[in-house]
Image 1 (tube, helix red, strand yellow):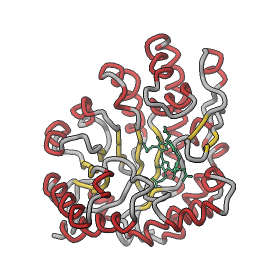
Image 2 (cartoon, protein in one colour; image 1 turned 180 degrees about the vertical axis):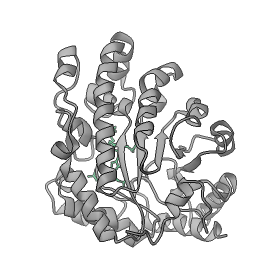
Image 3 (spheres, helix red, strand yellow; image 1 turned 120 degrees about the vertical axis):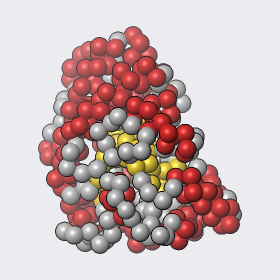
Image 4 (cartoon, helix red, strand yellow; image 1 turned 45 degrees about the vertical axis):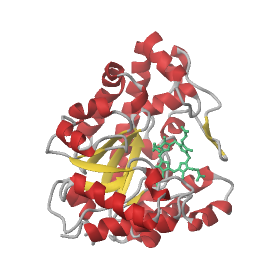
Amino acid sequence: MQLKNDLLLRAALGQPTERTPVWLMRQAGRILPEYRAVRSRLSGFKELVETPELAAEVTIQPVDLLDVDAAIIFSDILVVPEAMGCTYEMVESRGPIFPTTIKTAADVERVRVADPHEHLGYVLDAIKVTKRELNGRVPLIGFAGAPWTILAYMVEGSGSKTFSKARKMLYAEPELAHQLLRKITDTTIAYLKAQVEAGADLIQVFDSWAGILPPAHYREFSYRYISEICQAITEVPVTVFAKGAFFSLEEFGQLDCQVIGLDWNMDIKQARAAVGPNKTLQGNLDPCALYNSFEGIKQETKKMLDAFGPTRHIANLGHGVYPDTNPEKVKCFIQTVKEYSQR
Ligand code: 1CP
């Protein structure tokens, strides 16, 4: 299927584009009343994620309603630990909880390397339905969490400010951590390859908890597994978004991937100098900038576009859009990117 709008893919590959492509992390979700309407008819978040027709519907909502240049499959990074045998519950307004966590060598032993077709078929089906219904309008992004971020949830059992149980494992039982990271990485590679087979046009790896590790731990327990994933996914472009990992930008320049995501703490010029000229950069407007006035949003967006320059940039926020953001403000950001970057 030929894509009608392939700006995202061309920008990822460093090819010339008529304008800068734009999408938002967490664009499918609670900012849209239309999402909340679908969600309110269901038992919970997991029913939405696990029902391919519904996941496809909310994946496409931001393409229809916000006019973004890409869709991202509606799912969660936590489906991977679940496939490996650690089920999660999504508790309303609190976030995910794992009733059982990984503590001992026996726990790691019990964790399985999951076959995506057997254990994550609902995501692959959602990708197939979405691709059919998108009918080539925009590319579809598939994703997974980075192994370190997945380990953090499996060991901690929930979200956390410090993830100190997970970080403790890196000091107290580094070999055990590596055994678990090995299993997560093998599962993730098979899962991402299956997403590409199902129709994903680009893959994003989310290392949401990169920034809580010291640089040496980041290299040992996260970067090297991300590097393996990048080497394994050869069929489509790959984006690595490691939140808070400003200290590793130079090494990200060496990854076998096409796009590096920047969070809003990162200085655009410094990041470009560190990463080098051969990667596309994605980001990085502060999600809180969307609480500004319409005029303020336009100014901040133009400043960001000027700093990135006209090529090798995919416009986005520096992290997911906050649920209480006015969709009209989101549209203002998107329209400003489209108009101001027109070449
Ligand atoms: O019912 C709801 O609406 C719950 C909110 C919600 C949503 C909409 C959660 C719970 N997950 C999602 C969907 C989701 N998660 C997407 C969908 C596609 C899109 O971007 O539009 C994606 C890409 C994710 C990925 C995800 N889940 C990440 C990585 C990205 C990031 O934000 O750093 C992480 C860390 C999660 C875990 C997660 N899922 C949900 C919550 C509240 C959390 C964070 C928990 C925490 O640690 O505090």
